[in-house]
Image (cartoon, rainbow, N blue to C red):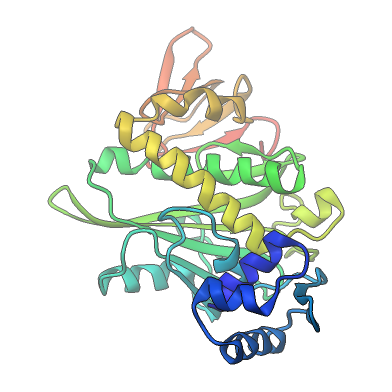
Length: 326
């Protein structure tokens, strides 16, 4: 009920009477009073005025279970939310929960990670009170080949959510980085459990650099945060919920089409690699070319100097800009 009270107070933006809250949630005035008291202890500033009711006073950002639940406006993505102050990794926790039967749409969120991971086993800097770390559990019924496109769906969802919530012109560096101002602001990692081509589950994780911070020396030249780019505090809960809303919509398109065809135009419009010179680091053959966008299978199309176009699969190679990170 606490999340529902928060959602109503935030939506109304004015006083809500205790009687209305009692009727809305079919509880006593004492139950409402206790719930509001607990929210106050969590840091919410809620004022009560006789004959007027309760009002939520916007103040500093709060981040936790009830904040996320009260902002989540989706049918299934982000339901339920499981919030942790500290985890080794949201992906690791999501895999454990998935093995134990967690339903599709379960969202694991942590304020801090002690063993955050990126692609190819790289570590991910995960301080507390600063960034958004989350993993969504999926139980798809499509092929393993189609499952590889879930990362592209999440990338599109994150880039659009960042643009919507704070106005930063985020783009996508294929296959799994979100960039702005030529620097990385988000990384993603998808992992799945497969048995004889049957997918038990997919966990789709993301880490977004949100707050003011100092990056480790080895990534300082290529990493940035939303605070640095927009100069103001961004609500981590609001951002995560916006990502879930976009993901739910775009994932439905993937399910309907069976490939990425319904999302190609949206994705390619945000692809920072597009029409740029890139270097493909393929163990079989390293080559350079010009990126031309992705195809319905989610492969990056790279045009070589001789005019031939090579489809590049994200799981097999790495792609770098010829003249820098992007």
